[in-house]
Image (cartoon, rainbow, N blue to C red; front, side):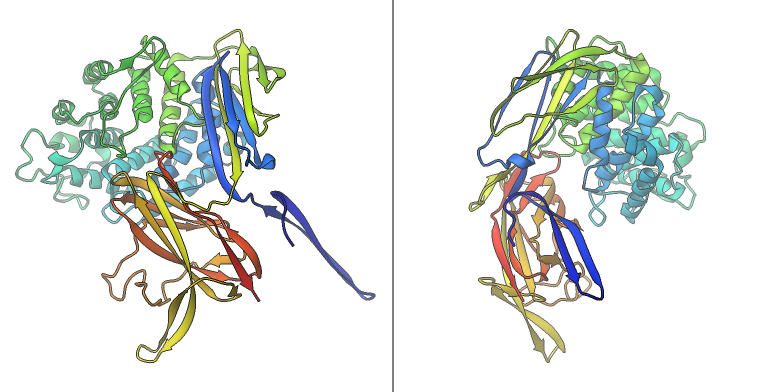
Length: 604
């Protein structure tokens, strides 16, 4: 049996006898023989979107959507759908999935939750909170994943989100919040704290401001016994120290140390905006206004757009001008929502849209939060308008309400396509098209990352000395029998120096399944995942998730080539395609590498 086109197939089987009969019907998905590609575009009324789909595109797998939004607030609903449906779950993505929806419900009539989210938001938040509790490290911080090092940026991001969820009425575990605050305090009072990025220190200050004095450990309390007191050497003005004022039950906290960081040359607009928010939430209105003036002086302003440029270390957490601009817009919304730069900033953000989202979950969540703050501050409610949508010469007329409209792009074709929306009033438009390009994938492709994959058949051999089975490797050159094991070896190599936040998507061929618990296997030439002793930890990824169609590996940091393995067990006889491995940066998806495809055969 062979599938000739993608989509789905219905299989029927029946057993008929004079005495009794039975039958079964089931639908099976048929996946395209290729990788998913995506196009995104943003513009305004009257702009044309011209794009081309390659000749090898699977015609049955072309999908397109158009988003018509009269305001930044109208972009919230489709963005919430994107965030809630995001398939991965690191610490940042877990928080970004539910917090914007919580804030959107809190905003009332200024935002509309997608129907499914509105019906299940409490369960959705509960699942996210549980995952973040599980991901909190022993030191109280959070990292990209569950078992990596804690990060000042990520810990501040998660902690601010938990505190905002608590403010919105959700129950958040007190011990988790206290341990998170304690981690930030301890980290910022280390002797080498002056070496930390100024942006990270500003983010921690924002978390402290949201937490308030109630979560600051007393000098002699059980939590944070030593580090709430200033060790010797912290009196240097360039190091942060929350003085005794921070441990009182009446605000504000003492953020005098932030003034030194605001003068640091490594402070980017990203951290500058967070410092404004920290002062604002701490009740320091005058300092917030003065800091906002400094932030506005760094604004890049054009005729119709404005944004903040970030010159942070490449690929770092704060190397994100969309998120920095969103944070700056949020600061303006809190303090000066009618500032003349606001419409230009909104224009720029809307032009950076990619369909329903921005580049990543992190910056999409930041834009949503800024949009909600601005809508609440200004009470913006645009009126309904009529527009004409033309796709490849076919025109339809529809009304766009204040909350915006979303429609499928019908009539797409392989080759050249053109989309245009016209109307009498200003309208922000964005579109997305996804498709599968079916090709052989005989050569690897590299745009900053290289990936390679090999398969080896495993044959068990009993080792009398250790009294256990050891599996010998041999190159996989023919079929494997059902029940046999296959060792998959993956190598990921960055080509542009050290990279951060990389995911490796490894499609698994139908007919073989991932061996989830492979710790007990001993394979000749491959060290045990945890080694033969306590200190033998030797696998290189920070997280792994196994799904029906693929297994995913997550790296918080890649400074050079890494090689790692996993196991497959052959189960169903047949001839199957292993689609190429795909590696990419989560916050810079244009940095990616594609491997080669391989055919595997399973015999009985």
